[in-house]
Length: 152
Image (cartoon, rainbow, N blue to C red; front, side):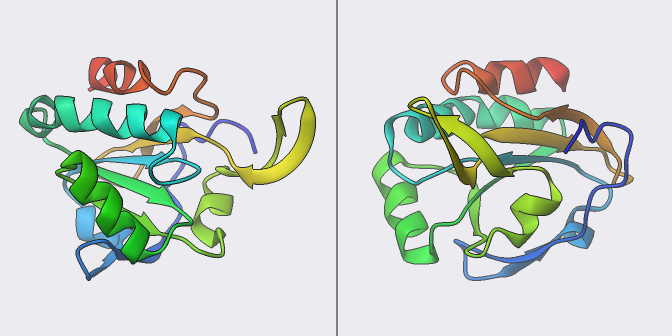
């Protein structure tokens, strides 16, 4: 899937770590950051989540909301949130339906082999539901949150 910038954000409806169902319509009028990551409590994913955690206040000041999305269940998300004191909701997309719509699931290279899985990527959705920025592949998880903040 190509870059999604300028396109209407695909609808979604997923269970969050807060026990609520989240959908795109809940965020109309706000800037929404959706970051897609492979697995809770793994090295790269932890660095990225902690980066967003550390910048969360600045991101909120810019009028934006962060949601992390992975295939992990809410129990896994709860442990990850507690262990690293994450101040934002993590969504569960166990069958990767939403991630596929956003180009965040598919073929990728891992240790020199082509595999199918979650592609670390991020979209920034404007208050009107249009995708303002799309990182189709995030190469450096630890520095990516700074890039997102710079775009805001």
